[in-house]
Length: 497
Ligand code: KIV
Ligand code: ZN
Image (cartoon, rainbow, N blue to C red; front, top):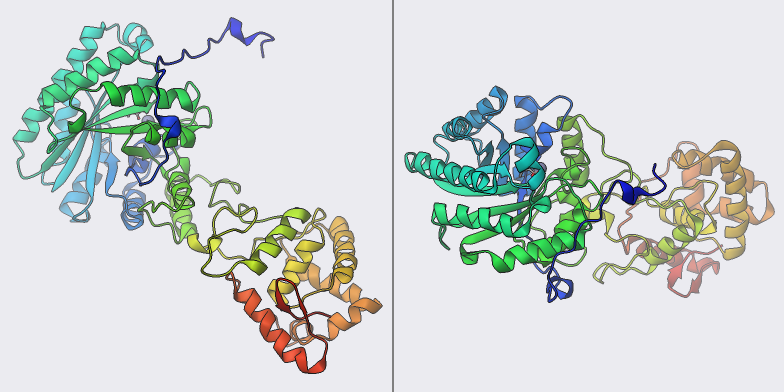
């Protein structure tokens, strides 16, 4: 790397927008979502999806609740063309779903794309050409006027061809590719030319999609660009402003969120952030971010694991274990202080109260995840985690002194044997060791422990929903109250040793 990167890289220029409004706005409704998993996502795979995988993912997208789905780049591949035909001829498209296809702004590609859509009930034709200076000058050797002419000619042709297929309800989408690197005045000129040529009206809106084809700056600058366009576009009431963030700087989700605050009404992206290079914006994270702010995303991820399995199968790419909301480890705490806080949070959480469990921004149950993996034991875990496991799994509440003793043994054991995954086996070994110590003998005589430990009495699966634990503790306390061994403690009744 260079000692002085400024010799090679220039900072991105700020947008002249002194009275920007977006920083004081918040998002109160879901955008129109458009899944491009089957197009942008598919184009970025080692091996693009075959028809079976495409159909499986299409069905999953419909089930989740997407109403706009970019299904193909039909002029680029026969598989894609045939897939569009199969969707239409096989009657696979739900009535409330619009399919979309992408085409470059070139005559023969537009013709082929519109041909693929014959007989569709409603379809979005997505046309694009690159507008930024490096593309104009270095890639295509075109002037600004040539770029505008290319977009306008494409839109005219789409109008002509779609007029000839009146059985379909048509929508035009136009993307100035490389928008973020394009001079804003020029992006505006092209977009206004497109809406004028189409004759956009409030009843026949044009989708103007402003992509971060390559993410080149901080998300606040993108938000400024979107707000600037939102405020300057002609026929604003006849336009749906859409964003299509890529994730080159790792800020696609932030870019999309700030862009919504800046006036974007529609977001394009892929499930779990698949897509070219670092991916398209992750629509699952965006949707669940909204959900955790109390805003319905209008997408259903109540069985997120099933969605993840389908996406992994179709893309043949794994999802990272720390991926927000879905990764195998995102609802797991290893650190002792985190475990302790979570344990206390679960004990106090009432089923109907606002969610407030430390370190868990969402209730795992809302996305179909269990509490099984919330707390795992390794050599970093403290007494809190061990205490939570005993309470949650076996209904045993340890007094503080015993928690400390118990966690020391667990730590010693996991230090020498590793830990985490085989929780029950480790606990069994630890408990056996403890049973030799005086303070632990009482624990080993408790009914939950004996039921679990005694051969032929395997542990029963417990209900781990919030509030269930408190309920069990009350039951256990009630059963033991006759013996005089149960005591009340702050935060609820519980069985204590
Ligand atoms: O990233 C991009 O610019 C695109 C366009 C074709 C919308 O995928
Ligand atoms: Zn893209």
